[in-house]
Amino acid sequence: MKKALSCSLPALCALLALALAGLIWYAPRHAQRAQAAVSYSGLHVVGNQLLNGAGQPVRPLGVDRSGTEYMCDAAGDTTVFDGPSDAASVAAMMSWHINAVRLPLNEDCWLGINGYPAAQYTAAQYRQAIIDYVNLLTSNNLITILDLHWSAPGTQQANKQLAMPDLDHAPAFWTSVATTFKNNSSVIFDLYNEPFTTSWDCWLNGSTAANTSPCTDVPFAVAGMQTLVNAVRATGATNVIMLGGLAYANDLSGWLSHKPQDPLNNLAASFHLYNFNTCNYVNCWVLTVAPVAAQVPVIAGEIGENDCAHGFIDMAMAWMDQNNIGYLAWAWDTYNCWSFPSLITDYNGTPTPYGQGLLNHLTDLANGVTPTPTPTPVPGHYCAVHYSASYWT
Image 1 (tube, rainbow, N blue to C red):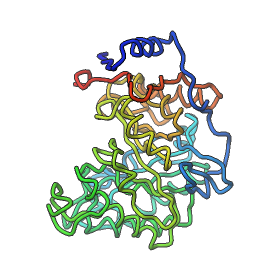
Image 2 (cartoon, rainbow, N blue to C red; image 1 turned 45 degrees about the horizontal axis):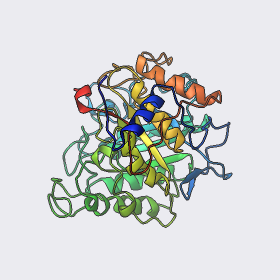
Image 3 (cartoon, rainbow, N blue to C red; image 1 turned 90 degrees about the horizontal axis):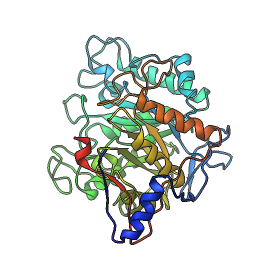
């Protein structure tokens, strides 16, 4: 494993290197323990905290359940889910001590447009399968995060991730989804999976035509986050809304200055974190994520690593525990633990080597064990492990 230590003060670097080796321990700001059994209904935002209806703090900790974004685009498929979606499969997830499941959705399959679903079921059946699964999660006192994962403008089919949500269909998608789930306050709306326009103004305001300001790098009319927030709220839905930043939700540097207006002030920031991302080290999180977490709840909707190990997520989860940031690991599927990466080898919940790290960590939290803290860099003299890009190629 290649690591680079960079710091303006060599002595401080040496001290922090010892801490990383386990010779010196830095106390975390909070000893984070798993939340006792509380209700996850009535979710809302107060300041930088996510609270339930009883005013108790809530931190989503869970998994992404991939499949509902892509199973509907193949003509031969007969199921909405990639794998089981019954009570036993939910119980297997819960055995990992999770309290949240993130469910990716397909814009065209939900709306029934552009020839989708291409699979052997209708849009109404796709929607009902999602509704039934959300109800199952809710009945098990789990938070559900619904995200717009695959979308497409015009007559194009939603079969991949695009830079931004499209103005043609995304507002209608969120109007429909919000109307469907507005009476379930355990559901959070994650408005767009991983934006990768380069413009924060585009992210907020969108555009009216292809490649026009402020979305000059997007070849279709864009629905900005303000437009989608407005679409959700126009339905009367009061659900918490998550908004992912730029660079595939890995960049939150402009989030606070471009925060959409929400009459309910029920917004949370979504952060995605993989070992191969640019912002994949403690210094970057201190500089760009912690300031956001001081103002609004931050939920890492996806975390993971593509080396079939868990050293990176161990470090990331420890830092997020200290900073009261929720996180969900990609993904509860039975593919490989390298390129996908998968947490499990079967739907009984047998972990991959990568998934073992998440299971161990959530088990420790559930048992009241304080995770190993990460060193807290001294402002102005940052020094932390930076996983270099050369390691991941």
